[in-house]
Image (cartoon, rainbow, N blue to C red; front, side):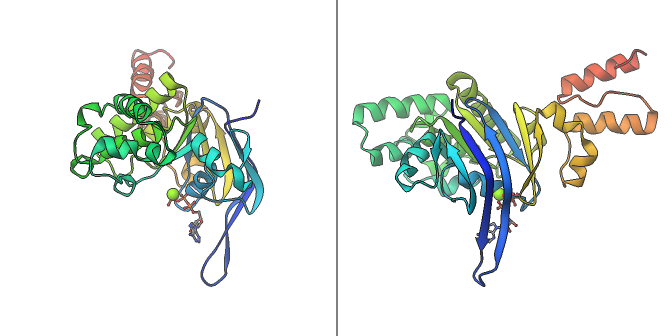
Length: 285
Ligand SMILES: Nc1ncnc2c1ncn2[C@@H]1O[C@H](COP(=O)(O)OP(=O)(O)OP(=O)(O)O)[C@@H](O)[C@H]1O
Ligand SMILES: [Mg+2]
């Protein structure tokens, strides 16, 4: 069976106005199976957005290939099927709002696709319920908070019934409450609808909630594994310009100053508290 996203030896060159080529992705092999919640990390300019753009054929490979739901993005006649299978959500929700009423905004893509009105109504209502924005359906989007706008944008792609949603730093412009609400919605879509989620983020606390973490650097895939496997590699992560979750930072600092001998694989506050409790009681954490 094919994978949701399969990048094989993916290379991408940007050419700027002076015709200087810049290699943004260099031989990336990255496969994301159906139904996975994957996070992609990497310092600024590492190639994350460029990779995301290849997942729904906004960018096309300069070398190698990308299969989305088994479809090669280099085949022009497949482009709309690819975009239906894999939708994108961007950082700035203001750039994604197109209508003056929330439910019209969510219906926009469906109307363009010629979906019958009754089916549009059903899908719009369901999508708004999924993102907890149904009660705001008659509101003006520009008066909503950033987190609410982002959830409306997610409802818009959800109404198109994609198999996969790629989100490029969807919480970067949100306050902590807005971020938490958006993350809650993403986990709900993953669990209840089985949608594949590819989340590009600079927030480690979001990445630890994923099933898999891939790290890009200078256009290369440098690390790939479960959050537990990735986040214990603190030195490597620091060298890649990334931080580690605060729980890992605390345990590492205690090891440094008190030679506590703590395992530093605590990814959540609860796990961290458990390790500390055992240590303080004199047992091995
Ligand atoms: N339109 C463009 N023209 C030329 N070079 C570009 C263009 N867009 C991106 N690049 C370059 O390609 C590389 C990868 O950029 P990309 O936007 O994919 O990085 P990113 O990991 O998403 O970074 P950030 O965390 O800042 O969003 C960078 O070196 C960047 O300068
Ligand atoms: Mg980016």
